[in-house]
Amino acid sequence: MKDVFKKLFTIEKHPVKGLMAYECVVLAYLAATLTIVAVMHSQLPNAHSMAVGRLHVVAITLALWGVYRMLPCGMTRTLRAAVQLALLSWWYPDIYELNRLLPNLDHLFATWEQSLFGCQPALLFSQVVSHPVVSELMCLGYVSYFPMMAVVALSVLLWRYEAFDRVVFVIITTFFIHYVVFIVLPVTGPQYYYQATGLDDIAQGVFPNLHDYFNHHTERMACPGMEGGFFHNLVDSAHDAGERPVAAFPSSHVGVCTMLMLVVWRYRLRRLFWCLLPFAVLLFLSTVYIRAHYAIDALAGLLSGTLCFVTLMAASRGMERKVKKKRNKTS
Image (cartoon, rainbow, N blue to C red; front, side, top):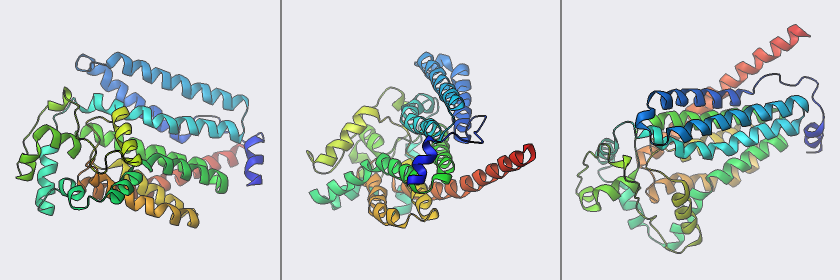
């Protein structure tokens, strides 16, 4: 760990001249969505604030690049990554504005859920297993999402410093891949769809097409479980603060968590892996328990997280080899 702190405050001999790979991903997503905003601005009530927000992200990214170029060391390099990771939560509510340009698809996913399982697991799970301790454990798993990401990123920084930029690239790109899917697949999840249709219809296997209902309605079901519980209240507070009727398929909670666990295993942080594993299992189950996702969303998250890890790790290794070749040629 002493070597890491030295690297953080030592001027780099070969600083990165351009943007980091993860910053390029952010700006590519920004440019693509800004194009949509420009073309569809008449149908987007918050088009102006969305455009201004993107300009702020560009300014922040370029400012951090400038700071790093003036003082190229591990600390300023890490600051660039930390800010982009923090901005992931800013991008999330923005999806709702773009997502509602298309008709809702929950009726299809609820129908597939019924065909696959013969019931609605999100409706029954919390009813069948309703013990307060189980409820709190499920809510604990759900709220461990961002802390888990922070712990993994910090652990890689401290114990696998050379891999830090690669891991940040994988994390950020995984998020934006899911965000793109959320935009083109408008699925709100059970907590919104069940609220809109009514539990009687859902229990009887009736799944009406709501079309553009969620363009104007954002009411959701209260989180099931032990009301007044500490972690139950945290889930409800988080949903009240930033949740929207969007981003159900695939579950980004499960997808990102799966990717993080594979990262930890890949870099042989074995103790951390076994410490995080119970939280990962609880998180997977909790997405259905609290009705944030259909069961097929959670299963798809396992697949999407694995695919993102495999493809992005390979892509990052390829980019690093190209950078090394260029350095060797110039030197």
